Length: 601
Image (cartoon, rainbow, N blue to C red; front, side, top):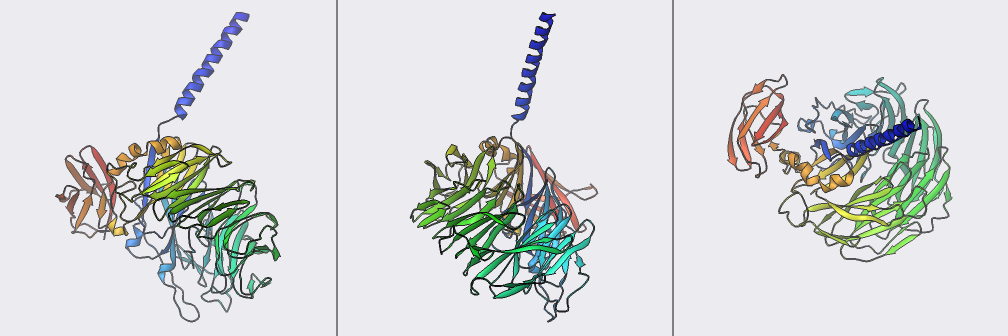
């Protein structure tokens, strides 16, 4: 009996070892590209994607409702943009260049939906943030500079419209599931106060407002200026958007003439973090903050409770341009990214760096979740401009990535763009990215590595374990990110979301092989095209072999087309006389094949 038990134990042990071996081999899968989704846009998109579960929102600002603007992505057929312009009491009609498109990207499916907001107000707002906008599974919170809110062609009018309502700034919450206006309030005159940023946490809407006037009113409350009437003043308000009741308001900073709110975010412990640029002493609710001793340009970071009490504060000063992108992580840590050509000094908390250089310097600062012991890193470049694209935390590592041109020195390692890349003979001054891994205390974890993309990486997002999104922009006239073509009919630049599975560092090290199938993707222009006219298909010269192509309409019917080689890199197609609509061009050359949408007017 004892022998049987012992034998059974050994068998169980070896079975467990076998299971562990199988699991380890399954989890260590080779990197795989799941999908690539393009956004045809010329640079009016924000640098960050707004996340809600397995959905990511790409926000395009100042968008018109012209015919060509409907062709924003291959994934999604956009029917129309219904713009509603409502005149104010003076008869002024808002023009359609202030509208906004929100593309909805779903993990594993690409872009699946879109929203179109008319009259959203000053949404460009500067830098990476999206202005007055927030979306989740059921609601859209936004600002509007008309007396009505317009979403996807529908006008939402409050039950009681003030007699004085005109072209000013308003805040609204629309439940797009029940198709109802849940909250609406006037935010005073647009010239005096506007919604810099808003976010929603459950039933509560947090809104930041600012003014450079002595006093202002908001939701029936009078706000006197408590410091100096010549300074711009910011307030944050907590509103129950279901009941319409304002819980509290706090004054959180004062500036002289330069102010910029980077972000507000509710972090995982329920507290709220505010990141802002400042140019003066900082106050919280009218009381000066003791830690703020510098009267000059810099950055202020506040951590407050859901009740509006200040519990932590950290500042950064910079006698330079400093940080241009600030990320607030879910755990409350901060990632600060920037670039500077001549940088005399920079501080972050108690850390101070003095440096002067005629060359470009990339800057990365990190504030841990505890907000203790922050650190700063500088990287020397041989080019006049370097940009930190963004960063992420991964397996207890801090991972920033840098866009550079020509050359850069990173932690004792030299990188040059002509040495590494997707192409055999890259041209000098092309862009390239470097990824660095740090331990939380700022020590280098591993050697920095090159990301072979001739593009700016705005974000690398960890969707889940071994599942990532790369959000990138192909600059005008660049060699390529993925498709290797210039999108002439889309102003020479485009954005892409690359969805991949695998270990991040395996993905980076094998990116050139992973993207080879996508390098075949042709560029088709003009698109939209005219029935009966010619279009051009550009492709890479290294793709050789017999050519085959045809159109397919929405019913699946194949439509043959006439074509001829104009050169070794492009084909001219004569479109037949066909009805307007969306068609799919199937294109094969040698062993490579692909398909892309063609829009016929």
